[in-house]
Image (tube, rainbow, N blue to C red):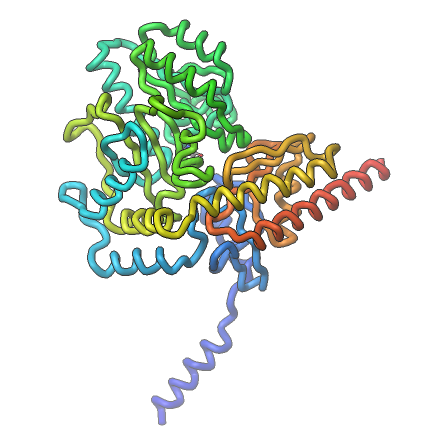
Length: 436
Ligand SMILES: Cc1ncc(COP(=O)(O)O)c(C=O)c1O
């Protein structure tokens, strides 16, 4: 009798337990999590395909952020779920002290799809992949070219990560900390897509340029696609100097631009990169990064570089699931087609509202819409209220980086929300002007 009473009491307590609201969860979060992000008031509880849900608030969002160009298979993809759960049951982490067959398999897949590359170093993120590339370039310059004070050239408006070295590579002062306190003195910069300026930077540092690190499409810097002329010129400048051409494919790589690599749009024929870095889409949302190099600069020896987690069986099983989707399911073709649809739709909107939209550009499903005013955050907030998640790329550019599995219907739905949100932005501006 006593046991039954106790059981009933427990069930009653569970039934009466108050589930915290999304708002309460946000208050608790802000108390204990550092304020490194300006966050939108959106709390996600689950996802399926291109849709994210806030169950507490009973809201659904079309996700055109995809964890910032990362969840290439969307959310809850069965191939990814099966690959990761099966791997978890077998073995999920050992150490790079031992051979990890999944890592070898994924490296082979990457090398086969990357002209010029021969071997891979695995890590956990884009910043770490670039950090590895920088260490490789400095060792190459010091040992092979006997340079005493090497310099690495990067582009203005670039973004390469948040470690001290990659922040310094990132040529945007807003990332460099108060009085530039997070910046180290290793880099100089040139204007993106500007052959004359890049040539001048090589001239300034003649005999000392270890490498160029550059994005094939500048993502965070406002979705700016590189031009073939510029990349061909960079290749020639690097060859004349003996420097490495290192391409940061963290955002643009692994299918996002409608080709395997963003640089497949801008480097052709015999022109290849010496180093390619990637992350984001490679693990489909499971942390995984990679740095690929050509035989010419394959200079790392045991002890030079390492990471505890990099390329562990769990992460590589996710990478292999992404690889399979790319090979077997036409993921890249879909990206190209949906990208064309998105660009065409946004250009129509720009034609209808040229006073609001200044430009629409991008490759595949890495697309930016530039506004005439620095109101990208306002537009992103309006879209979120109407059920579409987007992310700014600078003050005036709204970025569209949905999962690569996005459907035609989902792209149309996103376009319609953007059109409405632009209308609302215009209306609120008009009413502000009238009240002044
Ligand atoms: C081009 C590029 N490089 C590097 C990074 C840094 O990657 P992570 O945040 O995984 O360190 C990013 C992140 O947005 C990126 O877009």
